[in-house]
Structure formats: C-alpha cells, structure tokens
Length: 170
Image 1 (tube, rainbow, N blue to C red):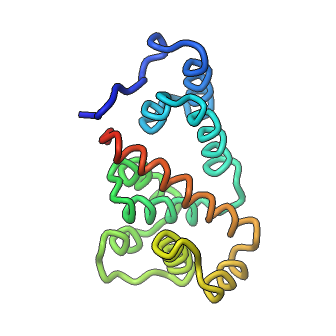
Image 2 (cartoon, helix red, strand yellow; image 1 turned 90 degrees about the vertical axis):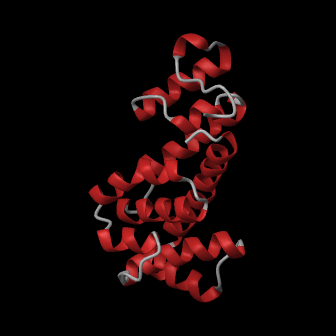
C-alpha cells in the first residue's frame, strides 16, 4: 500500500492538480502511477510531465536505445514498477530477450550498441559522470543531441523511480 494517497481520479482534484492531471491524460492516454504521486506537488508534476513527454515521445533517441536505458535505470534504482511498465514496450522496440536477461543479472551477451547504452547509464548513475572514453564512444554512435537526451532520460527516470520507491507506490 502506498505511503500517501494516490490521485487517480479527476473528480478528487481542482486547481493546479486538475490542470496537470488533464495534461498527463491528454499526452499519455490515462493517468499513470508516478503522476498519481507527483500530483501532491503540482508545481513539480507539471514540468516533470512536460519533460517526460519530450523524452518519451518527441526526442531523437531511437526507441530501442531509450527503452533499454529506461530498463537499465529501473534495475539500478530497484524500481519494479518502471520495469513492469517498460519491459513490453522495450520488446516492441526491439530490445532482445538476451538484453533483458542481461539487465536482470544473467551472463547473456549484449550487442555493441546495447553495451554502449547500458554501460553509459550504469557509469553515469554510479559515478555521476562518464569517462572521456565512454563519452566519445556515445558521441560517435549517437551524436551530441542523443547523448544529451540519454543523459536527461537517466535523470528523469531516476527521479520517477525515487518518487515511486519513496511513496512505496508500485
């Protein structure tokens, strides 16, 4: 059970919470759990939803890379909710079962492109930056725009994972 009430029904909201609720539903098709928590702070929820919209639906990062990065964050942050929400999306985006098993701790090999994404995310989260070597490899493979998007994606999904974990809202 969540540590705080979840705002899942439009009828229970007014003012800024209602505006954010409507925006999330308009862009995602329904209210999603992280925003049921974030609506406790609508001034945070609104900009977060806008950033999420950009990262998920309007960015330049390939779907496969984006979903692999999201699942990598979910494993690092131990956020089962994010894994459950994105594993099917990742499969549809072409993330292999081998890569999914690897993220869960198997010895399955990753392709070079998958390894680049997974190791970039792991290094960024654990070291708070990436080495020059990893940055250059990502820059060559993805370009500057996608390196920035990937970095922002890691921060965004870590934020969502923290919100979910603290609220115990899985």
